[in-house]
Length: 560
Image (cartoon, rainbow, N blue to C red):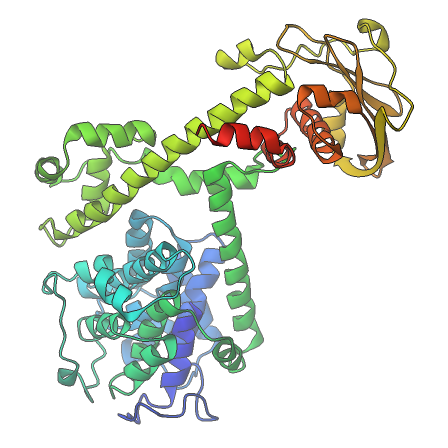
């Protein structure tokens, strides 16, 4: 989004005073933000408020700043001044310059397509106005995908030209697969339409060498400098990234309320990306479960999976053509691997193939890219699942979380905790007292109060696979090997605010006969047992244990 704002500010002084000098001064006291920035911030603000009434926010922000540099266009100015603003059939490039937050906020094509239309339709409800916004949003999505696929490697001109901006360009059927534009036809021509601006912007972004190069190409074309700069900048940002000095300089031109929206937008966006990965990999912490906010975000990320069966007038034809390219059996494999209905075909037909265009070009481009990607993801997911099952089997068998036969039937392996365990429930031995028999260490392990309620119930074994007996008194968590009664751990704990803190740990050296080699492995094993005992996600603790237990890692990694 900031890329669009920078493009607007840099281009502002040249909107009515065009230049063809590529080496023009980027920032000066003659530059400022225009309506392009105001409307972009408004769309971002709507997203932050969880609203899709983009027209309401655009209207309010434009009234807040009634006299930006360059002013507002004639019909749009009337819309701003109206107390009951209505769309007026515009196909101007204003719909394309304000849509960039959509391209960043949403991660699935159907959301991009639908939300981009909403941002445009409140004013620019002409099909070209809507198409322009959608093409820019999809191009930002393409750019994000390209950058992420590089896995941290720098973007190159060769890579960009090879893989392109297929979704964004594909919405314009007049351009063949070898998308070409003669920029000289557009030089020094002030064209405010989407059809005269958006394809040019896509071409410049596709042939850029850096973020700054993209902006300089756009402005020095001598066209609608601020808006072309904003559109190009919005696509160049995910492709190349923005130099920090340019970010700081651009923000210095903005009032505090705009900067606040921009900062909050990027902060929330980072959280959404982290949450998406968190949901994807089920890495939700040690004791924590998915809270309500996480569930909502997770549902939003996966909502498209459950809305695939809606009909589309051309769905049968599309399905027929697609099946020729990709056998239904293979689609069924995808459906099974990703818990998706086979009507994925209908989803693509409805949400990716535009109502305006009846050809299959767009949908086939989408499929060719995503089918390949999903095939690779499915293979990786299968491999990871098998590996995880392997380690989990070792974990349950070797460490004795509980009755492993229960795990096989989908039950919790933990024993019944209706009875609170006491020292008299099992034959136990005392912890050795000499340094050659046991280790003592300071500890800093925090246990939430709710988890502690479960832990204090103890652990009375129910089956041979369960290796542990555990009970608590007012000061110690005590773990014993169930077969021998050997005291394995004595962990001192105390109340610390609303939670509990384990501050001291004793560990029996005899654990070495069970493969627990060294204090580090022992401490990690204790953490694992306590976390698992309370029903928390003990996977991280298990991984720490594996790292410490080198012999196990070496032994079983060779078999994977």
